[in-house]
Amino acid sequence: MSPTRRAALAALFAAPFAAAPALAQTTITIQHPLPIASHYGAGAIALKESFERATGGRYRVNIQRNDNEREVVESVQIGTVECYLGSTGPVGNFVPAVRVVDVPFLFRDYAHARGVLDSEIGQSLLQQFNARGLVGVIWMENGFRHLTNSRREVNTPGDVRGLKVRTMENQVHMRAFSTLGALPTPMAFSELVPALQQGTVDGQENPIPVIVSNNLNQVQRYLTLTGHVYSPGLLICNPAMMQRMSPADRTAFMEAARAGQQANRDKVTADENSGVEELRRRGMQVVTQVDTAAFQTALAAAFAQYERELDGALLRRIRDWR
Ligand code: PAF
Image (spheres, rainbow, N blue to C red):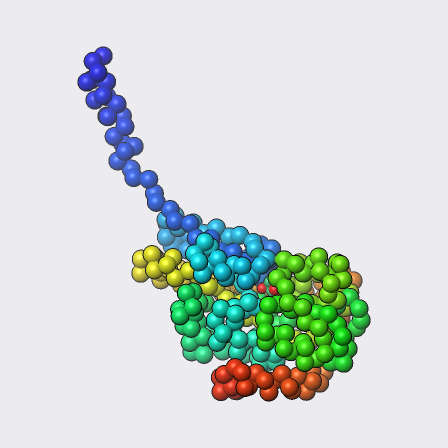
């Protein structure tokens, strides 16, 4: 066969394949700090399914675990990871205005917290991320935090005195624990279990879904349902990544984020309903009757400081929200 004819035949067979352009796929990585079976996992999976379906395979959402929340927010800011799904724990160090929602006993219950965060108050807090090189996409949820420790049953604020308590890298929370006479020790969640095992800290505080999904009952004997602070979650993404999306894809992403928020909150609700019983079954000693007013009184000096250092008017608006 002549070289010319061979080339013509090769072109003929190659043509149908060459005519179908390869599908360009963009990957968005979402990092979160908990097991996939947790409330964050539920939110991330719902977002992934919704967004991948809506964009017909042009986007792939890659869900990864990273227990160091501060590190993830930094990665999103510099653009090596596209999105963060986690608590507000370290976020006030990047966007100081957010610290207001970390104040203890600010939210009465889940309906109050979800209502405020979905309202214009929560939306205007999300707007503040833009000036910090981040996009605050939507509020998610971690849950009301409770105190665990390996030393003693905590019934009163006085029982907290002298306990070494791991806190998040969060100044508002640290202030509360030092006001109660505890020794707050901030560290990333990735360091928590070894610190509890080695006795570097006696206790920690986290929502029931976190205590259950991370088997913290294996390293903590006592649980007191202090509900001392609501721990908001949120989805934060890299601005350049958001800008590269077409307007239609951005709308689909927002819709997927809302599906993620719903799945995340539903899982928190379900885990809250079954979690305490599960932790008792696993051997934890649980104090359910807590004198909330006594804890609030013991925190008076911290509250005065929050009023001065944070946005006092906004704190009152949130407290009075109905
Ligand atoms: O305690 C923390 O650091 C957070 O509550 C956690 C477990 C990482 C979830 O956001």
